[in-house]
Length: 276
Image 1 (cartoon, rainbow, N blue to C red):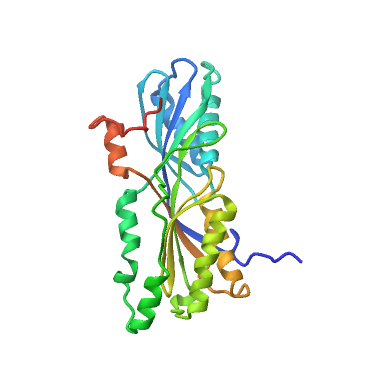
Image 2 (cartoon, rainbow, N blue to C red):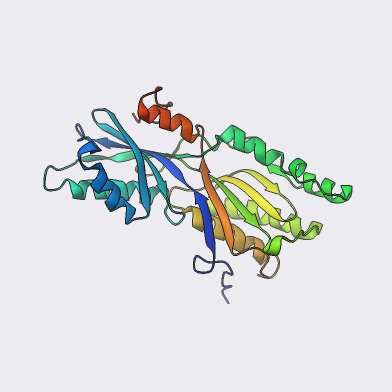
């Protein structure tokens, strides 16, 4: 008998901040998006994407800075931006893209800042009972060999996909049972291993958990969060252990401020952002 998930896209809501730097490459010089940018923005909005800015300083490369909803994965974003742009220009000219692309996750804080923040979670939320505090400190996870800002490759392009997931306990209750917290930790580690996700850090507390990981290019942030929630709930007999909501946020080597300045021409684009 197949166990049904407790947490699904139909009964859970997502809070999110998901930003991406996308570089697309032309077989020859690409047209500037400037002439049709408003139309492109309106078309992309139907796919729950927003084009925040673009850069076309190189002849056969255009970089878009976009935000997305939690049910879209990076591969979806590449396909939708390229497809919508080609469709809008069809009556004027044919846009010939190369098959490769580069998409990079971006956040309000860079990877180093966010990693340090998660590292300090037990310190930021101290428990009155020193035994519970010691337990929580012992259950923090960090794999120093995992670099979530490194370039990975799919069959058609390069990507950097780093995601923060935050899951809270139902009604904010504090569960300090060693068996439960240990089971949650092991469930997160097993979920990442089984799905081929890079796992950098787990900040496990008595009433919520932070996870920093690198999903695959075809995994949406929503899918990742729901997998973690259901696998943790499975360890407790699929009881409603968590709120029917979660937070997912992208981050990367550079923060949004650095990307904005690069796109505006105030500073050179960070390495790897303009494509090759």
